[in-house]
Amino acid sequence: METAYEDLGSESAGLVHKYGKNVRILAEPYTMSLLTQMCHPETRQPRFNDLLEIVYRHLLQRVVADVLPRKMVESDTNMKQYTPKGVFRGQVIDRSTRAVIVNVARAGMIPSHICQQVLHHVLDPAGIRQDHVVMERTVDESGAVTGAALHASKIGGDVEGSHLFFADPMGATGSSMLRVIQHYREEVEGTPEAIITANLIVTPEFIRALTSEVPGVRIWALRLDRGSSPAEVLKTIPGEDSRESGLNEVDYIVPGAGGVGEIINNSWV
Image (tube, one colour):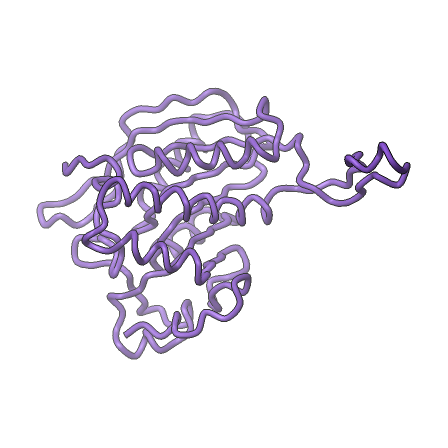
């Protein structure tokens, strides 16, 4: 059995691992509790999407607080009417930061919308854009993933200097994410300031694929799943043993959550 989650420690500590400083696995008691409920076989609509929104909003608030640039401000408070000292001075997120959120349909539709909402609270909405891409896995005769096909996109401009967000629930093989990032590199003008993925669950395979192909990528997740690893590997620190695996024979995450895109949309194809 997995041993990494036997003692979660304080809420802000995150999972101890050896994947590098740009990978954050939150492993927080609150979101882990809700994610466990969300992944249970008996959880269906509307409860599933309710939990999805709660945990994603929490994840994205943590991501935004860490990755976006900050600036010093002086802002009047309601106490200014009584005293000239009623002015807050301190560090906040820089509202002028530009952000592009990419909806990787179909599982990413709700998470990307939540990401847009979260960013609207702290950034100038005029500098926030949501793009859309329609993708699906490609598989061989056995059902194993061979890659990803991008069928259509609606992209509203360049990404120069922007923070490029991919809020996609399941980070399994990394093939879909790499395909859409390749599309932005080859077909969209500009170089982003940062590329950020915000996932509920990721596998070691996903982390290895992205960190090797996209240098500097920032990976955030609530949970790491490596349930297909040998028993002795599950007793090691995540990222320590190259035999780690979180995928079954047809590249679904183990223990995972099943077909999240299917459950979100109540569409089983």
